Length: 163
Image 1 (cartoon, rainbow, N blue to C red):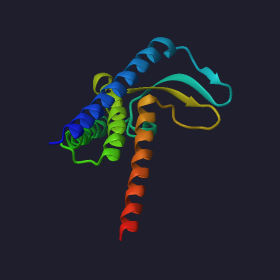
Image 2 (cartoon, rainbow, N blue to C red):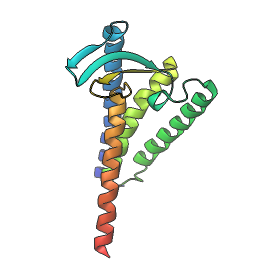
Image 3 (cartoon, helix red, strand yellow):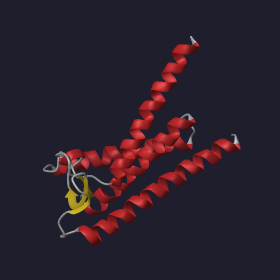
Image 4 (cartoon, helix red, strand yellow):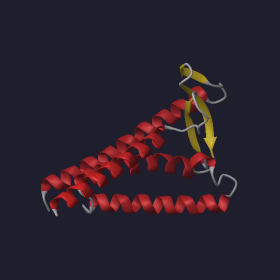
């Protein structure tokens, strides 16, 4: 196997670890500084910080069903494990690997919360619209998904042009 490819895979794994560490460090800060404090406005009318515990999945869905949440946690863990294996085994092209690494880093950050605490710590709040409170791991997942969509569209365009 090509040393450069192994090096890139190692960098992707390191990126995952760094993103998880950043996410968990910010959540520790949020618990220590935001829990029980109410809202902190960062940019008036735009962005604030407010501590919240999300016992459900996206937007608090399934928060009332312990069985459904256990199924979601197991499926999420298996999907992230598959993604890690795909990275290690070199099943992704390089741009897809980087997008997947960002998604997995965010997913693992929230997965750790859910497994250890039974909820995910959220703290970022848009003030200009009614929207769910979210966290940095959610941002990583969203950025990774947008990157994955762009990479996929560009790859398909290259295939069409090659015909």
